[in-house]
Length: 184
Image (cartoon, rainbow, N blue to C red; front, side, top):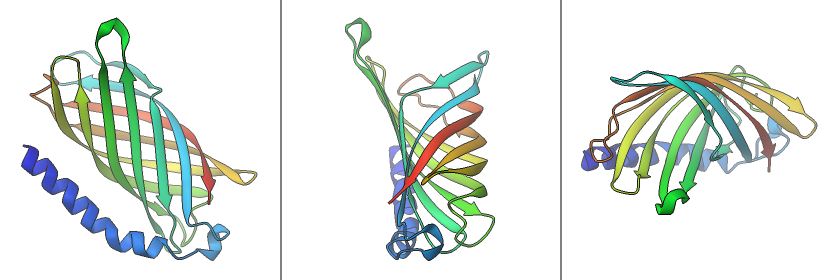
């Protein structure tokens, strides 16, 4: 399983290299910005395989860095971290991933609707075991300008594979994210 996940991560990195090179050119339609930096808060309905579902409010550190291009497509690495030291045990969940955003119009990465999809890993330690799971996601989002920044709203779903090392079954989450974006 780890070889499979490592292969998927390597393919994702190699697939993003051309976009990284393209993103280094300044885009005139984004005010000369090369990168979009943002933080998010999420809420959703999460359902584990074989268990009842429930509402989840995600408030860990959730950061994204968009690699702005002049075209309709933009690559966005995303990272979230949940770290807990309560009860004498340290637990964490680190979620690196990469998404592609496709805007309605070329260079329209500061406002308007976009479609997104991506993949990521769940690297976790629950205090007794550690393990890895793979996730895929898709959604639709909107950017609403706010001065030199923009509010970002996103609706979507995520599927996370089971992790036998952690004893976690597969999971489907349907939810929303809200965040703010800044450009550099």
